[in-house]
Length: 141
View 1 (cartoon, rainbow, N blue to C red):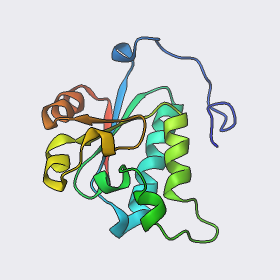
View 2: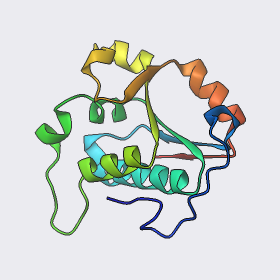
View 3: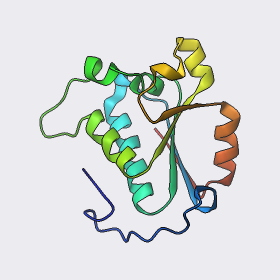
View 4: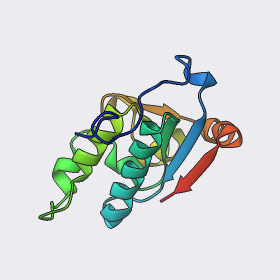
């Protein structure tokens, strides 16, 4: 698993208060139809966190499916030599990436917060807009 120490990033934390840290947002709309984009979103989120950004991966549309308990194991077909979504997710969460799923997408898919993977939170669209307006950077996948 990637850590701040083993990928060569200085581990000084800018501030223990997450609200005071520089914010970076990764928006992911891709799901099992494009696992490459999902893996990339998770990788870039982990990289931003390793650079001491407070990093939030915000999942909308098909990306919400990735964050439902049991769906990765059920739907991903591992490819030799490539990291799995589960590996990238573990790396991102291990680096402190906060993962939020769009409540409107969840409602449309009839997904509850209890259906989400441990550590993944539901958050409304206005939360994303507020965070994005404060972020130092954003990426979309």
